[in-house]
Image (tube, rainbow, N blue to C red; front, side, top):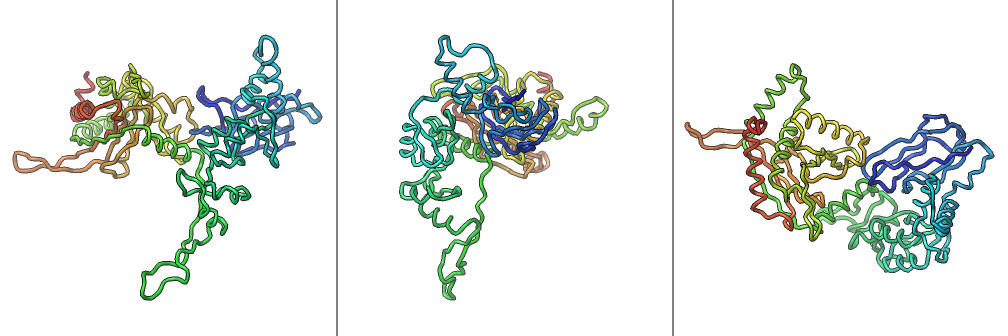
Length: 465
C-alpha cells in the first residue's frame, strides 16, 4: 500500500521547513531506517528516516524548496500503486470539498490534516496563467503594486496557484525591483542582489549582473594616470548568496533596531573573586563530581539571580503591554557555523550552579551541531552574549525582541586603582547592557548593573542567598 512521506513538525512553533537534500532518488528502493532527506528550520537541521520499506515512487518537492509541515512531500510504495490521493493538488481539493460539506471536515485523517496545511484558506478565484506561473488576480495586482519577482514566490494555493498570502510573504522576504528595472529583471534567468532602497534591484545592479558573477566592474576606464591616484581600472568581486539563516538574522537585527529605542550602558567590575572561585572549582571538580564550570557559567548564574529583582528587564514589551515573567528564561547567544543562535535556559534562576552549567553546555553543544530543538530556541526573557573570549573590551549588543534587555560580556582587562602603597593592578571585566528605553528607564537599568557587579565581586556570598 502506498504511504506518503510527511514533512515532520519540529517544534510547536515551526510552520515550514526547507528541504536541503534528498538522499534517495525517485525509483530507489528504501528500507526502514534509511535516510530519505535532510531539512532545516530557520535555526536547526534534521534528517528524516524511512518509516516504511518500498520504492520511492514520487518526490513532490525538490531541494531548496520551503514546504509547510505535515504535508506529503513524496510517496513510498510498490511500482504500479496509485499515488493520486497523495498529490498535493488533489489533497488540497479534497480538503476544500470536506470544508464545504455539512459539518465541515470531521475525523483525524492525517492525509486530510496535510491537505489543510497545503491549501487552507485558498479562495476559488479564477487562475491566470503567465507561462508556468499560476496566480489569482488579487495576487497579481498586489505583486505589480510592490514590484516583486513572482518567480521567487512559493505557491500555497490549489494546483500550485500563487495566492495573495504568498505575495505578502514575498513582499516581506523576497527580492524587490525598482519600476525602471522591472521589465529587464523579468527576463533574467538568475537572481540579482539589490543595492537600492530597501534592497531593491536597480538598473545599475542589472548592468553589473550582465557581466556575470565574479566579473570586473569598470570604475576608471583607461586605468590610472601618472598624475592621478593609483585607481585600478577594474574591481574584481564575487557575489555570495546569503544562507536562509543569515537572511533571518539580518531581518531580525534590522527590525530590532527599527522597532525599539535601544540604549546601552557600560560598567566594569573587579573580576578577582570569580577568577579565584573558578580556580577552586577547577581544583575540586573531579573529586566533587562537578561540571567544568566556566567564567561564563558564573556570569549566567549571577545574571539569573539578579534579574529576579528587576522585573522590567525580565520581560517582553508589546507596544502597550509589558509582559513580566515570574522566572528567568535565559537566552544564551551562541556562534555557530550556520550563524547566531540563541537557545533558552529555562528557569535559570531556580537551578544550582552545577545544574546551570550542565544545561548551558548541552544547549551550546546542540546549537553548534545544528541538532537543537526549535522549541529551545524561543521563549527567552533576557539574553547574555559573550564576546570576551574574542578580546572585545566593549560593544553594543542588539536586543532580541520582544525582550527588554540583553547583556554583553567583555574581555578581562587589567586596570589600576589606588592602594595603600600607591597603585595596584586588578582584573576588570566590562558589562554592556542594552535596554529597550520604551520599557525600561536608565536609572533602574543602572541599578541592575550595580547589583550585578556587587554579586559578581562577592560571588561566594551570592551562593549563600
